[in-house]
Image (cartoon, rainbow, N blue to C red):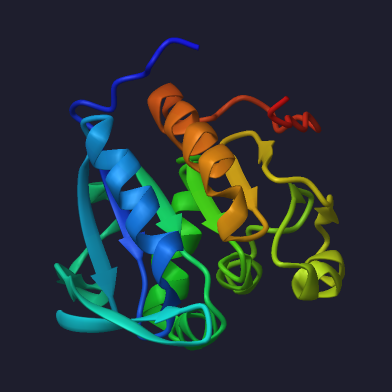
Length: 195
């Protein structure tokens, strides 16, 4: 497949303490390698701490606080997983307003593992085909999504994956969807799986 360039695209990666390290670092690397500008947005500016499998991981810098940014500044949104990270994010009204606006503007959103929790809270899951960490299946179904057990599911610019093992497929589809831009056409029920 032809390598798509994200030159000129600006992507927000939304995370707070407890994000799964590989689900944060690998998408950021893939985005930067494709030419995108990436900003880490969090509850506050400064250091945020990763979770790496079963213990705390590294510390990373949040470039901006969610209170100081607008979705209009970005072309796409990435939501890493980890249990603590989206559980904290989904309780913050400014986070929910920020995420909801990406959905309303039909901009690409990529969420992995427990990341879809935030999409449920923002009202973006309803009527969508999605995947996630298996324990979120009931949450997504109750929110009106159709849950599918695949390494990556794409629904009209919304990219979801289950776990760190799915990162190669997740990153590839994330870059494709961001390169395509806004998905303003009528939502389809198409599901794609990398073969």
